[in-house]
Length: 153
Image (cartoon, rainbow, N blue to C red; front, top):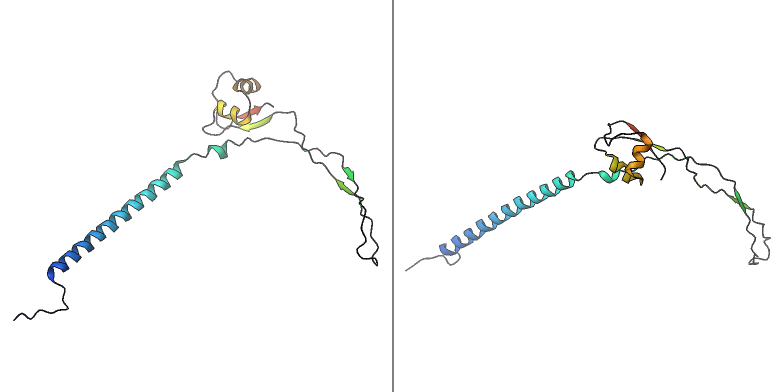
């Protein structure tokens, strides 16, 4: 008579379960490595992007002039909601118009590393020829730290 335990899983099923568990573990390890590699590649790509948009912001000087203030008086018919309260007249309000008046003197731009006359001219909306003539440059070579006059467009 065979005295097999009815609660024990047969050895062929145990081997099959062990094989499946090892395969799941391999897949989990491979998925983790691939996810880490993709994250690393994504961070490297993000870190290698240039910041040209932030550095190409033109430095402009503007003089603000004070304009004559305008007087606005508000007089509207008031309805009586509470007959016991006397309406007070609304004081006139002065509104100052602050429109900046740009000076006619050219702005000054300090050359940074990697700048070219073409890039500086595009950033300020002028031509390279106008930039060269305003600074008396014979060619397109500029030096880091040089101060260039930016003519008005």
